[in-house]
Amino acid sequence: MDETARTKRLYIKTYGCQMNVYDSERMADVLRPLGYALADEPEGADLVVLNTCHIREKAAEKVYSELGRIRTLRDAKAEAGDGRMTVAVAGCVAQAEGAEIMHRAPVVDLVIGPQSYHQLPELIAKVSRSKGERLAADFAPEEKFDALPEARVVDGPAAFLTVQEGCDKFCTFCVVPYTRGAEYSRPAAAIVAEAERLADQGVREVTLLGQNVNAYDGEGEGGRWTLARLIRRLAEIPGLDRIRYTTSHPRDMAGPGGEDLIAAHAEVEALMPYLHLPVQAGSDKVLRAMNRAHTAESYLRLVEKVRAARPDIALSGDLIVGFPGETDKDFEATLALVREARYAACFSFKYSRRPGTPAAAMPGQVAEEVKAERLARLQALLDEQQHAFNAAVVGRTLPVLFERDGRYEGQIIGRSPYLQAVWAEGPAALKGQIVPVRIESSARNSLAGTLVEAPAGACEAA
Image (cartoon, rainbow, N blue to C red):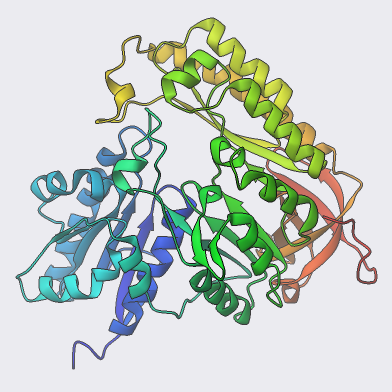
């Protein structure tokens, strides 16, 4: 049988952020013309890709642990006479530690950085001939996006759409500028075309992705476009009813394009009332050490501006405890900021040293037990705020975009405008539709509701 003619099994394990989810989907799109079909498990796969994230501590060690399991599966496949398993490591760990991965893990055939996965077909062909490049870690995002196939296969009515990559901010704790490269914005026309194709497939909601998505500065009709202008154009696409974006930086939100973006939250119906705006700390001393280029006060005043434009907006963020030099007083300042900001949801972490970042060499590294105690206190406050936000929508009727079946028969799950998971009893035919749901109860991570039999427009404005 011709090897190129048979269906080959592709397993992709995705670590980390939403952008990695998008990248994994696009890797599958690149490989589909070569006969690869996605598999749910790595057993028996012809190609295994680990799409890695380098943000958290010990990220690389988790990859090596997984590679040990993959090696066992590859050997079993070979012993069974089921052909060869090709193993690739992609993403930010690949970019940061590619040569070390090749040295430490002989099971790995390919190492591909996040800007090079469009080269997968060529690299796989070279590996199959036992020659050629095995390590691809170039920074060339424009080449990547130009080379990706137009066709995308999406599963469900919501999809991610990368519009910007890289970071020029150089926060002292972060590896992203070193693993994703400088800020790059895709041309507006390419983004609009991809969004139109998604809408044609039945996608009702897109989340625009970028390391600093509100720094978007892509070439468009009439000159450079801001994120706000891009959102306004995407809102014109028939069938595309919901738009979100993440992740934002306060510096860009307060910059030249920020006022227009804040105005878009008040004026663009399709733009959902949800803003992820990481602050990282509430102490100005710590923020300076992080090189965040904003203060706690400027952040809170920015939040006030957004809420003035869209009073019901759900605010989420990122917070780090135990950054080098953080004192009890600094931590109390973070708690004070959280109380004033009133988050609907928030991601919080203990500081972890990332090799090669300035913060890793800073004096005043905080003891693990202190970081753990501070994180527990912070998360207790954040949990309280999330419970309060969810409880506040009980009794309201909200438009819910149903996406998938629930855990139990006859149950479907979707998202509210505020990104809350909502489950209700209803037919599977409602998946992909936006339906009014009366919220009956709330928990920390989800809402429960009842479908409302009502004419169009009966649910509250989102």
